Length: 284
Image (cartoon, rainbow, N blue to C red; front, top):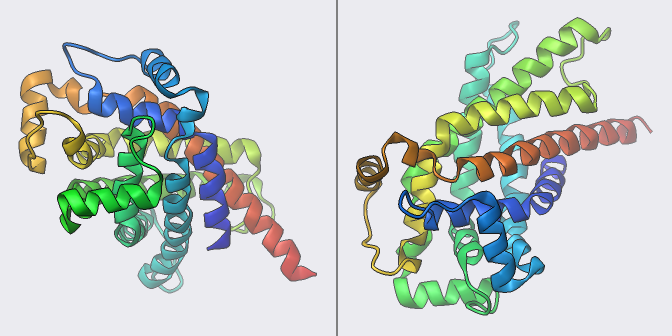
C-alpha cells in the first residue's frame, strides 16, 4: 500500500503538465478547430502562467495516492484469490486480477476523479481550491455531479488496468525467468527493464481503453462547455463518430500517451524500488 501510494504521488506530480494538456485537448479540441500539444501548452501558460500547468495537481495527488495504493494492494490480493494451487498465474488470471483491482480503486475514489477534471479545466481564479470546487458543484449541480461519467470510466479502467498490470507482470516475469538466477518472481528487474515493461504495458492499455476515457472526461466537463447538452455515454460515442469519424475517439491521444507512458514507467520504477527498500528493512 505504501509503495503504491508513494509511486502514484511521484509519477503524477512529474507528469502533471502533460495531464492538464491532455484533458484540455480532450474537451476543447474539435475537427474544425484542432488543438496541438504545443498550442494547448502555450494557451495554458498565457492564460495562467507556467505554474498553471500544475493546476489541479493537489487534487490529482489526493486522488492518485490512495488509488495507486489500493490498486496494487487489491491486485496482489485478487491474484491470491484467483490462483490455482500449485500453478503459476497465467496472463488471463493477471488480467482478471488487474481489472478487478482497477474497478475497486476507481470506485473508491471516483468523486475525486470528477473534482480533478473540473480543477484541471478551470480558469484562473474560477475556484479557490478543492473545497470551493466541491461546494460549487454540490450547490449548482447536486450530488449526482460527482458520479458523472462513472460508467464509461469503470468500463475503461477495468480494461486499462487489466491489460496494464497483466502485460507488465508477464513481461517482467518472462525476463526474470531468463536472467534472474534466484527465480524469484518478486525480484526487482532493474531500472531499464522496469521502464521497458512499463512503456509497453501502458501503451497497450491506452490503445484499448482511450475512447472510453475520452467520453468520461467529456461527460465530467459538459457543464463547463457553453451550449453543451448533457448526453449519455452511448449518445456521446455516436456523436463523436458521426461528427469526427473513428479518429475522433482518439482526440487528445498523443498528449495522453506522452503523459501516460512516463507516468506508468515512473510508477512501476518507484514501486519496485520501494519494495526493494522494504525487503532490506525487514531483513535488518
